[in-house]
Length: 231
Image (tube, rainbow, N blue to C red):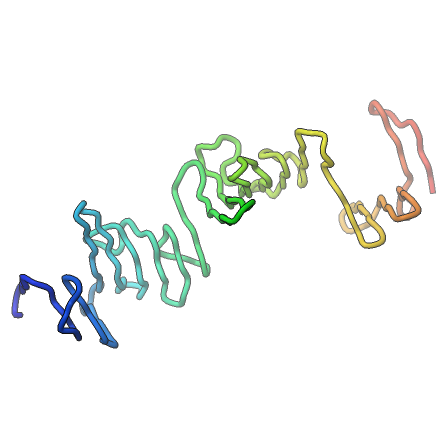
């Protein structure tokens, strides 16, 4: 056809019995070729909902958009040249990048639908959540429990969404808050910069509180020293 073409019935390519408006069968290569610009195909339903898929000429990426005229606007999924995949971005900088502008959170959901399974969220918190914007959250969404929250400055919270220390563990009930377990010895060591200053060690025969080198063990209450054990 030199200009516009029209077929009143079904069109078959590689078949004499097309099952739809366009039926392509046993064809090794199918091209949409527009030299110098994007090559794309639109899919339109009877509600005027449209998806556009094709190759973006400027960066050789393959994109899915919800825009009838463009592969640059309303981008939903991008397969970048080189293999990176972007959801919500047209320029993924990692093997999988998820981007969103939701002011509450941008999340990835991981769900196991078998008996007893749970739905988990891994989320970046948005600007609408006061005091928590920029935090990374791991959440048991099935039971509405915030399990771990990491602030932009590096504080880690377990059982709290506002950790005030490098590790902040909180429990609202009488359960065990923290457990340290080893094969033979369980130890919690303390360092001043790179120098070990003391440790708490437990094994089958002893509970040991130790001050290393020339450090002394000090017990304070009410802001005052009550007992000191020197080396």
